[in-house]
Length: 284
Image (tube, rainbow, N blue to C red; front, side, top):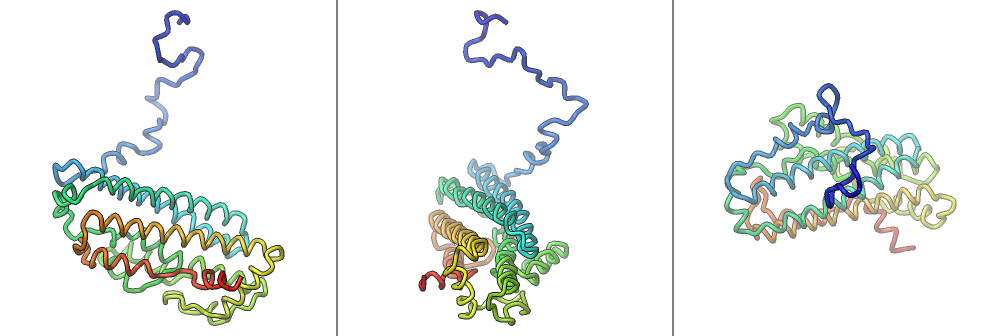
């Protein structure tokens, strides 16, 4: 096609070796299983905003799947004292967390009137029942045995959640690494029941203080500490954004999963994953 005969605004494909015939090879849609993925949005009402609600939560689950992939691998790297790859993985998690936080901004375009028109279709389903969220929370270190009970009706999922509950979290593995490096981490922190909530210890503050007071000597441990702080910081922002979005849309109504709704979400904001990493800042 000559320059004079080009359609206005059209991209010139002359010279491009585009694969037009994809009948006998893998296509973009095949690789991403788009037929299955894009048919997974099945609103239970005729209300316009239900599609937003479904897509918001489905995409969040996909991003959480990536977070779990990265955090689980980072835990292995820390256990093997390979912090370089772990830092890359945790940096990626931080970027994903930013997307998850931004997701609440999109959902907040739904008004109370929009939501109430299809909320009864949800039944007892709730984000409280997200097993990926619970797996992520447990691997980050926020352990609570009661939270696993809601998955007992699904044995395969319950087994995954229970395994994450009982395994060392990323913080437990970080403390074990400090101990292997010769820092004074109490032995009871290294061989405790990992299914129990972590309890802050002033001796662990002392161990982290050594790291922060000689950053050049302990640079990789210092960077690990800051990566963990960033992880928890963004997690708290995610929770806060969740709480404010729920408050904006349903006010003080109970949650569909049986919790008190906003009141429950506010209580969750008080939880701290890595208490010593916040305490040590006061004395620096």
